[in-house]
Length: 489
Image (cartoon, rainbow, N blue to C red; front, side, top):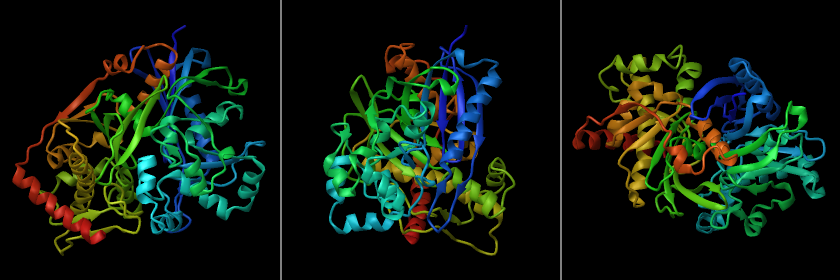
């Protein structure tokens, strides 16, 4: 019987499942969507049970699409939206509140209090992360402060906190395993980045009981088995946060290699090998841990990318589908002086301003919907250019960039991105590099491939984009974007 790796890719608005063969080729895929909810300005949450139910539906769908059953699955790899937090009852397994999504800003007041107490430099030195509601620890604090039942269960040692990987493993194992991998743990702001372990001083700062947290494990290796209630006993052998998984799936396993993923947000990661301390608003994060050895990355996070195009479609009604944005952007020669700064929930790297709000500048009577749509796509690229400038300021050298994600099908965006960055761009042949990375980690975990380098050799490219602007054109366009961002700030 042909054996496959089952990759689970749990994202912000959908849950996907892919089957991957020994040649690192995707042979089948399936997905299911769910809704995010916005009960207050700046709040983003989702039904934790819907996250699991759509993930299970995606698993059933991919098996059906391939015409196989669970006996064909050699191992499971999991990748997930990071920082999103679930709280559940250890005894019953019941989710106790909606999952607080990574974009949510409800814990901003607590984060501001940490800033006022002068904790920013200390926290960044210990965790590699800046103080921001983005990360999971302040979300945990908010739940403890605002849900009496959650606080009571925490006092009794009966509460489980977990990022989405831990929640899926809880459901896959029928509650037998409470664990997370080192890459996801590094995004909570509770892990000592140099030691790869929960930090008592950080737990004390946030007031998080150690009993609520999952055990930290390697990103590759058999760490649990699915419960028979799942339908079969299958090893869970690969786990990584979505952007780290994409870095791995893009074959960026050597220092100096970089990738950018275009999904709901954008995430540019540069493999640094050893930990690099950023002085320009970037994050130092754990890329993965294999055999107890940790690899590190420098990361810049852009909050609004695909979500901005969704807003053009669903919020403003300027386009009927995301695909229409490319044709509209090409229908005009330039943006007509219009800039969109999508600070709907603040600005991420390198600004880290949670109070900034979105704006559109440069509107005239000659402005049409094509100009606004084009400016929105340009805004995605310019936000990534801000991140690249910060990486270079930190001493990084990047000669080319590998990209993946749903928006890479937009050729206007890809070419504009190459022009804005001034470096060549290569699209991955497999747009779902995130799920592929989870599968490759699982393959290493069960011995299909011996090393990360062996999986990197399987990477395949697609379109390549070369920059066409002069340095003067790039500088002028960049200055106009920076002026618009200053207004939002």
